[in-house]
Length: 105
Image (cartoon, rainbow, N blue to C red):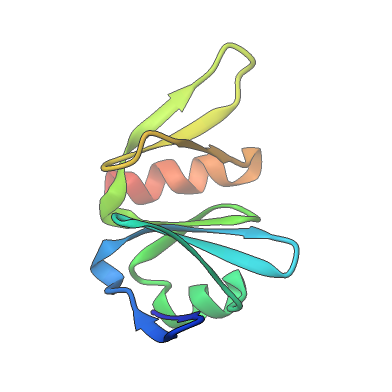
């Protein structure tokens, strides 16, 4: 994935990407070395790399091999547990069933 910085374009290997998270106009690319802002939309990223990533929420795409499991909190909200990252990403209610099926494969 090409990331624009002040000193030029840097490439982040797709294998190091944990997830993409959208907020307003920008998308955050979270990778093993940190995070970067990119201008690509989640829809475009999903179209290009859909076989490697799974949609967990309208604002998040997660690399399949980075998903360690699902957790449910006291309020009944599901969260994706990631390998290599401490954060938990919310899973939308309408995508929980589909995500469970994909994780069984």
